Length: 368
Ligand code: MRU
Image (cartoon, rainbow, N blue to C red; front, side, top):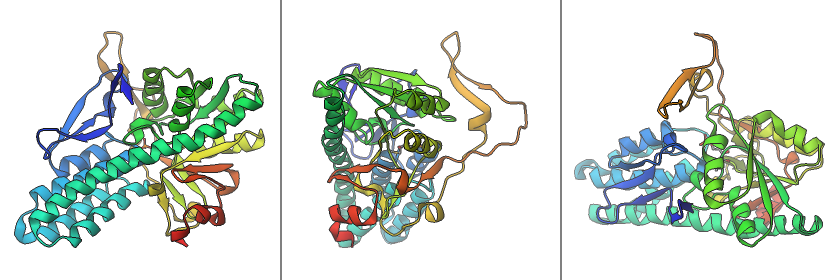
């Protein structure tokens, strides 16, 4: 997608040195555009854990490049042990997004197939690039499928603006390009369908206020930032035509883990007859599990994300301020689970399906 009119991906290898992986450090957005260079798997782990990069697809792509950097530095006599340790370290950085373990396992399987260390190193780079390219292409296709849903709503409204609510950032910043929830929006906007996006601010990390609002602005998509608790009120007044969110892990029966607060939006949408869609590339399915509530690990993060807030002060300096009394007890779950029964449909690179095992397997018969 674009920043000041210039096309970017969220992660890419340096054109002159593949031992350098470049990322957009998202901690500084929307105020500063900072590109960070990653040269070791340890730095990659830090970048995922501390959310220089975040979002399920991008976490997976970054882990793929992390395995490439690990392969470059792994000592020849202990190559396999070093790679396994790198894989373990990467998988432990964040627990909820299934794309992380998926990308690391894809690398381990590919590396195992090669005989020489040189071939293993070469393959790890190829696979990292494949993971990134596939993520971008799958999100582009999600956009094409989801655009048809928005087009149908637009026809139903005789061409009036389609109002779409989204939570968190499942935009291109959460993937390598296009995004999952935003891909249908970008595709509809590019096709001339009038759309407007309600952007949940998404406490406590504020992915909506910091990232979704910024990327929609860069792409020229009309949008309005709202406080997290506003969506239900808008739905009661007929101001939301559909909800599209992303997901960090989706069970084979269609339960979805997404940013904390998604469940409440799904409940409000259900109560008001507003279609609730979840967009995902297939790397976000966890085919091994059925019950989202019982089986998806939910990340807990530092309470400081709730008690403190970071932004620009009036002198345009990045500042962190306290907003709660000192030593306030906190509980900071990163995600919640929306049960399949509240979901109108899942939009993946293969098309639109109901959130049920039967319909998911219709599009993914190889997972039966
Ligand atoms: O904690 P984050 O920013 O990595 O979480 C990202 C989300 O939960 C988003 O809502 C997104 O829908 C899933 S990632 C595409």
